[in-house]
Amino acid sequence: MTDKLIPLRIAGVGYSLPETVITNDDLTKLYETSDEWIYSRTGIKERRVVSGEQNAIDLGFEAAQKALERAKMQPDDIELIIAASSAPPDLYPAIACHIHQRLGIKEQIPAFDITAACSGLIYGLSIAKAYISSGMYKNILIVATDNNSRLVDWADRGTSILFGDGAGAMVVTQSQDGIDDVIAIDIKADGNYGNLIELSFDGKNCPLVEQYEEKPKGIRMNGRGVYTFVAKVLPHYVEQLIADAGMKAEDIDYLIPHQANIRIIQAVQERLGYSDDKVVTNIKYYGNTSAASIPLALAESVEKGNVKLGSTAILCGFGAGMTWGGAIVRLREGIC
Image (cartoon, rainbow, N blue to C red; front, side, top):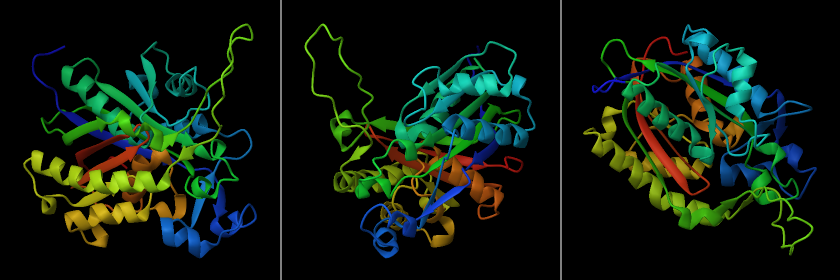
């Protein structure tokens, strides 16, 4: 521990996707819809989904391996694992504990999950920054992974068209040059809007006591309510985060938002006055991958050269809770 705050460096990022692709045309086999109807309302053309035994743990493990490779670290260099997931395959053991085991880490390091839905990466980075800054840990692995295709009601056109599966990971470490790659970060929540997006894991009461009416299974979402809330809150929030950091919108090179709906992304883009080349979108091909959305968009865009290193970016997202958050980060050479 130290009295002086230690700066953080983003050392490596990685991502993983299932191979199976489900197009909008494929969904016409399940219910009445069309490619034009889905795309015009969401910006989504297709999404990836797990198949067979594959799940979010597998995807998270693959993303973690890639992030460690980019960071030029070995699994045993990691001192803490934070996993973010909207709905893990197992409530326990935690995904982070599964990742610890899969990576073959010899030390008995702390590993835990957080549930902030699609804001999970920002929440995880905020926690990691606090640990790094305090000197408690030097190297931290953040994994954000989801397989919502197993959790949606595939008879519900309103939600099943939106979600895809994927994972993203980030390795953060103590910066050795005195420069902090997290220029600003903030997280928020308002439980008064929790009923906008819900997923019940309720079981049954003991058979010896009074029973209760079980909630419906599968993701339940008030799409119009979510859009209204986010369109009102997020653009102003991002603008304020930039101002609080003592910066202007033009000081930031890229906007990397949660890939929930193209209309919400465009609302933030318009508020900041950004051209299309400054905004990272991959929702067309992957849909809403929940907690994985932001790190997946970041890692893929850097890998493909759509985001240049040596730049700054604002990561922002929102999710069930309602939760939301944002981070202004430096993207240095070598992270991908």
